Amino acid sequence: MNSIIKLEILEKTFKKKDFSILNDFKLEVEPGERLSIIGESGVGKTSLLNIIGLLDTQYQGCYKLFDSSVKDLSRNKLAKWRNQKIGFVLQESALINSLTIEDNIKLPLMYANRKKDITIQDRFKRIVNKIGIEPILKKKPLDCSGGQRARAVFARAVIMNPQIILSDEPTASLDLENREKIINLLFDMNKEFNTTVITVTHDLDLANRHERIITLKRNE
Ligand SMILES: Nc1ncnc2c1ncn2[C@@H]1O[C@H](COP(=O)(O)OP(=O)(O)O)[C@@H](O)[C@H]1O
Ligand SMILES: [Mg+2]
Image (cartoon, rainbow, N blue to C red; front, side, top):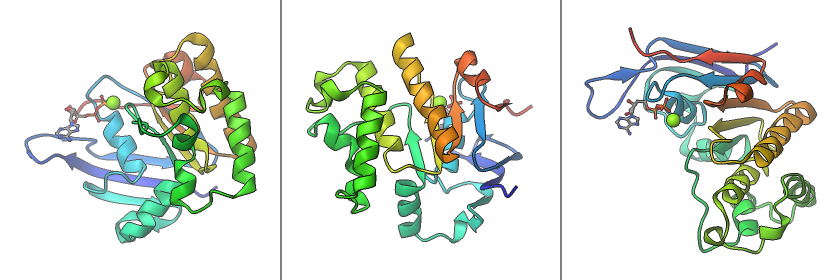
């Protein structure tokens, strides 16, 4: 099968170029794969997700996503793909505090001009129901618990039915019951829509529920 992600990083450096991460790192991912990424803190897991998710294009290397070379994509196209093809559950994904949870979750629809899209409205209902956040839809983020906010962030990441879902420690702030709801939604999407799932986690049980685990290591 054709890989949707073909990534070869020579190195990633930051402004102070005195150290680098992800040296000679290669990754290919097929459509519908469930991949988890583990490794000790500071090894570069979040940086790698930022690269895969097109949030960071500053690195030495070559990245083909959906058969297009990322280097050649316009800013517009990058933004569009981030909105429509990639769902990002960041470690500290901020919700907008002045908007209700419902409006936060529907934000990607606004950007894509698809607020009235009935299919997506249906998806919205299903997702919200599945992860049990109806009671907080009209609330503002600061009136919700950390676990409720984490579930809202997740709902926002999957509302556009992205082809790839990238999650950075999605279960870190959740109790067991909500952890299970999020994991089920993630894997249901994988089954139903063949969504590619890439999850960074310290939760070894969650990692083991993926088909493939890669361990990032520090440079020798
Ligand atoms: N914007 C940045 N500027 C400088 N160093 C950074 C920046 N972002 C991350 N780093 C460094 O890169 C390394 C990898 O970070 P990160 O990808 O967040 O690791 P992980 O998610 O595995 O904990 C760490 O040493 C971190 O301090
Ligand atoms: Mg991290």
